[in-house]
Length: 432
Image (cartoon, rainbow, N blue to C red; front, top):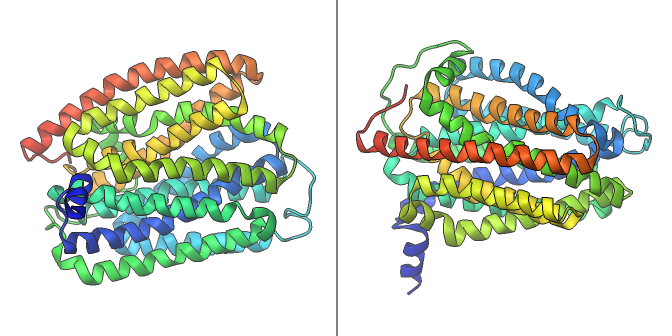
């Protein structure tokens, strides 16, 4: 009976499949779990050290920071093998997080100084570093997965990977709920240690499964740091993936800013703000975890990728309308839970499968531009909207109208990308 239920929810997975995807799930468990611990603190630290009015500018400036980082990352792709790239990137971020944990304890530049100022450099640095970690390392991991598994395994294996990731997100937010007891520096230190575990898992995975990876179909050669951008702007399919992967960030940024502004007015200490945001993160990830367990695999296998890609913008449209009708903190809280929850459990697995019929340069270089620069640009666009309407009552009206217009365009693109992917897979074609 249990085996029938398991096959219905996850598909026909062998013991080897469970072990293989379980290891990948464990790596993403530590990446995403650490990110959610840090993400919650990132906003709380920034609004209490710099001020919530500067959040739109932080998101816009992070785009410039990430452009420089992507160019350096693209060179690393040429220099290093994909698994060694994970070793380097994960270790570097782990060290940075641990250093920040000690700096936060400094009496002048750390949290002990309660003066709110736009010149609090540590808050800006921690914001940019955490933003880049959430985009770059997650994108790198999925690029590694896309080059390490066969297409026929993806539909049944990806939900397993994401299930572990969401479980880590839930635990990460549960840990943040103890912020008043443990203090934020200690949480940064724990997150850094967790990131250090990722290279160890990938090393074991390579030792056990490197001989079973898909055969290389192209010669490894250096193609330059902007090759990914060239591929992106010259391939309509990749531009479509860019749209379905990042447009939701515009609406999420607008709603998130309104929620954070209300949090700043409601909660008076950085620990209280952190715990509220941890509650939001926990709720979003419980939704994602539940849906990954009972719905994602079923939706992808039975209803198809196109359905999943179109369903997500429809959910966001409903969330935007509800906040417009009833603009209070807990409505924004519920809307953001829905957006983040279905981002991780519905849209992300669908979009990652879209990369399977693509080349190595697309998986690593073009994907990094999409997931890092594209996502930050979408956030920057959302931040530009919030900065253009500083009065929340104005932002509510114009932000909602802009969001609904973007969603209409997004749905059209989602249909195009979904049908194109189906043709590519059927004809065994590769986008390169």
